[in-house]
Length: 186
Image 1 (cartoon, rainbow, N blue to C red):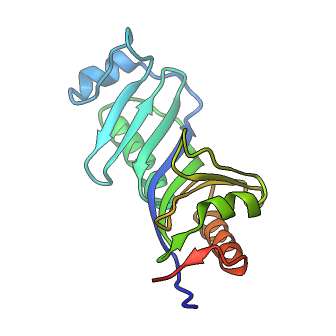
Image 2: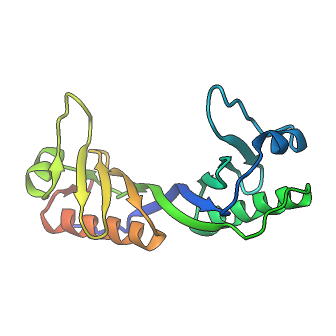
């Protein structure tokens, strides 16, 4: 029985940040024409960076949400760059942003197929309703993540707060699938 190591790719890190002060989004939009701000549609301004390729939502409360980065470090760097750019254009920001990772989404390939029916019956806290969704929804308690398991051996892991938790979740699940003979290798 070949045991392959899962290939794990982090596809999106969502991080929140705060600078603990109000922001004038109209002023920011004036100074950065590329910033999208349509308060009738959405209360935040969208500040996109090309490098790292991210979008940071800015709210008048001083809160921010950064999406699109591929690592915790990249999310922190993106927020730092946004704050630097704002300061450079004369927007007074007293404190550096405090960044907290809220969610890490990753895509995984286990290198073999999975018996979904059996997996749903065997794995605790799992749900499988093929008429509604083509994968098993598995809720892991430690670390607290949700993993979507597809028959192709592909997984999507969401809910992790650290990259370490992504790897721990995926490796725990993979070991469990192996142990319970739920993997099929061609």
